[in-house]
Length: 450
Ligand code: GLN
Image (cartoon, rainbow, N blue to C red; front, side):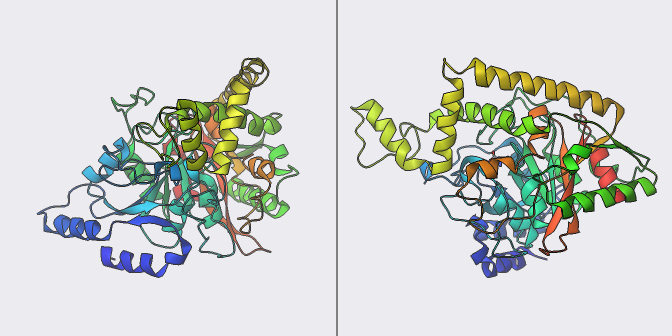
């Protein structure tokens, strides 16, 4: 298919609201230029990509789906974007998401909600809902999102596609708008494992602009996918019996574990007592980091400036700009973050959460010394109906129970679309997590066993 075909599909799918901006003329021009080259430009020659609206792309708009960045233009490109372009990719547009990547439904966007193409009365998941629907509905070949607590894996699960969150430090965060810097990682949406592997291999690796990115060499993931062997899979029975989990999802995953065992892998139940701590720990630490990261949007250098604000009254100036610019969920998190960091509560919340993070990391490290993967659901339920959870932030946060663990501990995780819910007729997936920098095992297992 050509860029024209994709543009037509995007046009016909406007009501899904996946795209914030489509670069039609530019994408067409680039396709022509690529066609005229004597040889393919690179590994992604002509591959059509969409970018979540939190990833910088030089001379293009960037808003994090927030009013506060309305009209902002990137002055540089993210390292991941530079690498995609260097390998011949065509960027077809930027896609919708929850404001500053905070959310699980894509309902917290200044550009409105996104519809799930499998059932338009349902949300696509979030925060990278636009990235997921763009791939799901065939509006691009692959897309980038960001995953701080599940924002790639959960919408992939809800939309019936693949979502990969790489190890923390595998992919440069340079040019990714920060939500919670010690959790954030750019991730990939695709329909096939070879596509996922190819994009990962292109965007990964050392980068002088991000001191947290690893120097570890990048394997040629896409060349190594056929390597098949017997893997050791651990699962947490507690997690599959958890009260928040839809029993149909639990059953489907148990069946899949049996299939994998029958296929020659070992499947072992492991006791895990920390499941109920992961969501509180995640929300204490990420809101703390977010409150600090988002303090830069004050309307001085950039960001929304209220018509009523007066620079001479500096406190009032900030207050007006930020009150008008940020949406409700972002404000809630800035308040929560300031609370857990305040001197009277710092030890009780922030310090305590850091300790839990350490215990959790040690615990998973031990398990992943012995096992190749930990298998979990991706989400406790299929995609919610529009509006179903939007009035209840706590219920929404609790639904992140299976995804935040990988971000708290920095390990890679993938969501694989393997099932259709018998009652809701909606897709859902299974999640596999591996030891740091073991993306290759995740990808090759997935390639040969799904
Ligand atoms: N739902 C989670 C949150 O709201 C995940 C967000 C993300 O990964 N960006 O924080």
